Every structure is written in C-alpha cells, then in structure tokens.
Image 1 (tube, rainbow, N blue to C red):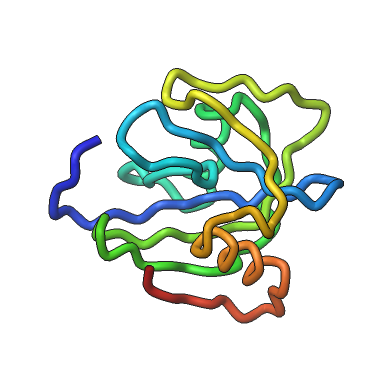
Image 2 (image 1 turned 45 degrees about the horizontal axis):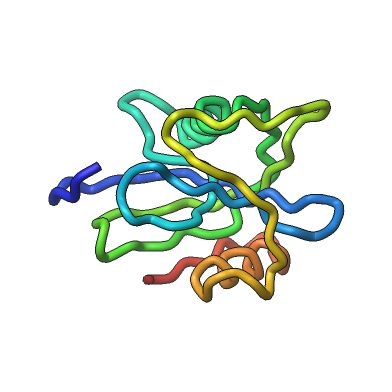
Length: 134
C-alpha cells in the first residue's frame, strides 16, 4: 500500500472483550504496526457495509456495529478514520487473512496514545461524536 494524494475514508471497529482488553491486528504490509480492524470504503459502499466487509475479510468473523464514537483525521494518510464500537457475533474463531500476521487483545494502558484516545472516547461515548487530528 503506497501513499498517494487521494482522499480516503475508512471505518474501524473497537472491540473490547469481557476482560476489558482491546482487539488489534498487525498488517503484513507497510509499517503500520498494531491497528484497529477495518479499512477503506469501496465505491458505492456505506460506512457500515465497509466495516462489516473488512472485518469479515480480515478476521473471518461476523460483527454487530453498535455506534460511531469518533472521526479522526490522519494528515500523513490524507484520510478520515471513523471509529465504531462493535461486538463480534458469537460463537467465533478469528482466522486472519493474508493481509495480517497477528492479532491480540491488549490492556487499554498498553495502547499507544492515539489508540488509547480512541478507545477512551469510545468508552465515554455520550451520544456526541468526537473528532480530532492525529
């Protein structure tokens, strides 16, 4: 995935398990490190359809989208990322696509600052969608 100057809109899920740990995935391409499951919208797709499709492609799971908790601008990628609180529909077994090498559940305090901000915004969601620049 190479950077170009096209604008992108993406949808990402915040999944928090019963132990209050956050699901992150690690890409096999680029230097993106750990990130939230999800990705860019395809032409004609709604934001919910994109998130559901991306999670099915990346994790081979069905999800329930609960609410949008924030929208964040990434200057480096010339894109907006919409964050949604989601649940994985049980029963499930995560099976990664070729695009990802690993997944893990992390304590909120272990997350890098930008990820932690998104999770905290999600957890304190009061019906007001928050936005910011990273």
